[in-house]
Amino acid sequence: MSKKEVKDSKKLNPRKGVYLSDVALKEITEVLSHYNTEQKIELIEHLQQLFKEVAEYFKTNDDNIYRTFADRQHELLKKYGKLFKPFAFKRFDNYFDFKRILSIKDYYTAEEYNQLVSNEDLTEQDIYELTTSMRNFLNGELHFLYLDREPQFSADSDDSKDENDKESTEMQQLLALHYILKAGFKIEVRGSNTVSEFTQLAHMILGKKFTTLQNSSIYKKYKKLPNFDNPTQFIKDLKHIRPYFEKLDLIYITDLINEDIKTAENDKKNAKK
View 1 (cartoon, rainbow, N blue to C red):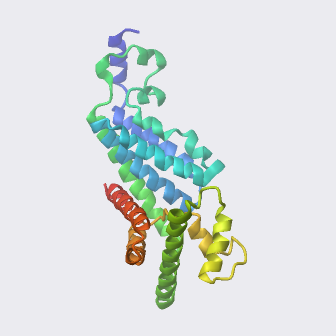
View 2 (cartoon, one colour; view 1 turned 60 degrees about the vertical axis):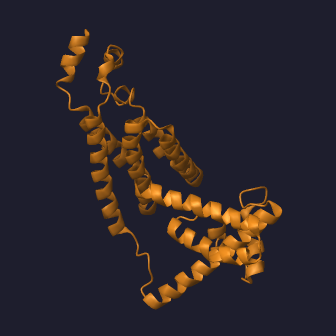
């Protein structure tokens, strides 16, 4: 097949961006069938960010953009374990490979791909069509998943407020303990000590009865330290505990807190892009 024949045969195919968005839609729809509502929400939010990063990576070719995606995906892998296999096997990272993605997704045969000239790569318009279509699709999916989600507040608003105040205080106490152990003894939750040992110590120090890990709200929070899901609340809690260490001139702890505040604020800014 000549290069002209390859080019002519592609006239019958849809535009590249449209084709890739159709493929991605089918892949996402299939892979989400393996997960429950909360998991679908988390994975869709990950994919929303992914296609934003694809658009930005195409414009800038900045490797930091891909690394941000890869780090986020690695955290999901650690969290989901073997449950992550259906998602991982879809290889959504291939959408960053602008040179090979059309061949990978069977827009071209191997023979056609090998005969392409250099100017047959994806264009900015193709990427715009792909990422815009994905944004609209994922936003719609997320909307209906939120409608199926259980309420995130108590039926009794006053009880809900009291519980939120209690949760916030407990998080602040655990953060304070985290920084004391890290700064004073170089001990971290995901270091040589297990989370269960930290949990039992925290229960004793905070004066809360310990029964089992499954029943421990401290355990559920402590195993995430210092990375809470809500960066806004995380920053608020850090700023709440910082003055207590500043008053004691515990400079090293204060510096650790300031560093985590800066990181959380940057994460919050990047999430809004």
